[in-house]
Image (cartoon, rainbow, N blue to C red; front, side, top):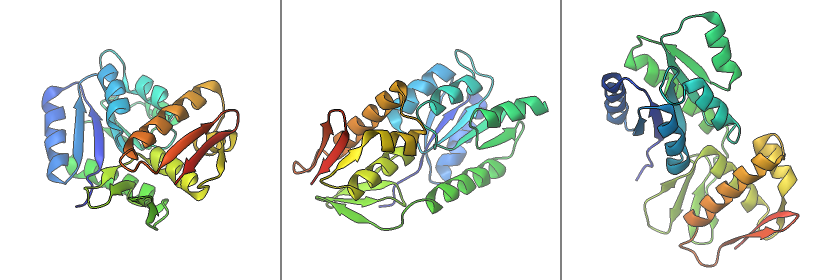
Amino acid sequence: MRTKTKILLAEDEPSLGQIVKESLETRGFEVVFCKDGKEAEAKYHESSPQLMVLDVMMPKMDGFTLAREIRRHDKDIPIIFLTAKSQTHDVVEGFTLGGNDYLKKPFSMEELIVRIENLLKTEHNNQDETECNIGKYVFNPKNQSLRYMDDESIALTHRESQLLLHLNANRNAVLDRSFILKKLWQNDDFFSGRSMDVFISRLRKKLKKDKSIQIVNIRGYGYKLIC
């Protein structure tokens, strides 16, 4: 069964948000719908989406602030801003904060869907296309998916997929902590290190069905995928 792409949608106008959500779901996407920035930040960590569509003007936390927080520990997830603002400096700010695209209201659903598909296509083209076995799991970096034996595939985020790709490439050897932080997080500071620890914990949970697989913390050096 084909794994659905998960999109996090943050929009404080309930009617518009529901229309966008239902339209995306009819195109085969899985949608996590949030009505303010704080809820969206929490759902991002809980649901591991593969793309985010963020309204700029939201209560509790605006879209720009949310994007800034997300980009502190995730440089790769595609972000599309939705906004009624039309000033050039607003558009510039959105891209400066790490946005990948910017759509002004009112917009057509067809245009939003095309932009989403283009961003996802770009992301997929950057993935290694070869499936590989990790114990009893089949890992597909291109589709960002992990399947245990004959179970349904589970989706990985871009960063989870890239981290697992590097761990597997160094299977049974130590993956240098500083190297992978600079490679995937662009720096190896304390906050990036804590973020990577979270992603390692997520991978452990997703690989837990095969007891022969371990991701071991080699204190002071990095991590080792034992399989």
